Image (cartoon, rainbow, N blue to C red):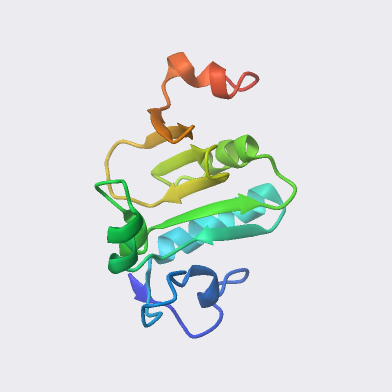
Length: 150
């Protein structure tokens, strides 16, 4: 982990892209450089701007909003993203190609793709539809990605 610099973190991302949106915290953030590198690779693959919907989330904000036991945003290893001129399903498939991302989720309810660099040995893939978290399996993959079955 590295503390984010005041302005530019990488070629296409700055500190302000990742700050907590709660408006109450002191705006200090923790941020994984592996996450930033993965996002740069995603941008390269997409050939379009990657928009950070949510980056770092302070623990207080997380307690008030999170329905998940593990919130990777609070430790600086997760981002929720969209990509200009790309469908969310396409963004998810591109994110799957980024080896740094060990967690990739297609959130159809909130209209973003979650990516994270968690240290789990097994990659986690999922879809959130109508607010329900669904693990992505070979059996249900065709439902969400009809033209891209593995």
